[in-house]
Length: 237
Image (cartoon, rainbow, N blue to C red; front, side, top):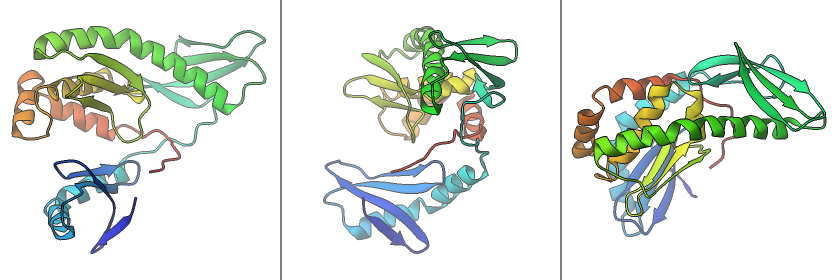
């Protein structure tokens, strides 16, 4: 993906067979990515970026101000999050199959002695996935009925640049696994956000209006989500 400089702003420009130009400001450092139609001229792209420059700077400042978690070593004493609350990790080495349980203020993780950091992280993520899979169906059922939009598929995966995604053509929705670490209202906000996309693909006035009808305090939930600590990742685009 080529790097293009507009004044003091450097962005990743990707030309695609799409109809509309899209500008994204990506975590963790606010890198700007522009997806533009193949036929769109450089001048038109530059003008679009200039029109969104204030918004781009605001998004970058927001990312810079967010607290970062340290790199996860998956050892006892680390703080890990569940539904917005921090829990201390307690790692116990056992000659048994791995398991994770929530006990008091601790996340107790039992793993075989030979498990390395990556394997321990996989165990914890599988536990997180199970918790999210338990909560998500009830939430989806509630809001699909409320919004009168039905997803053909709802999946969970780790995503580096989005909290959720929706394909209006196929009605397929993906939810970021990291939301299990955020307050429950953040997950609800993303569920509503993606379902509303089944009625309106763009983030336009109609989309904002639908969000305000169904979830009047959605801006508060979005602000809370944006203020939560970003997970440590070796980000790469």
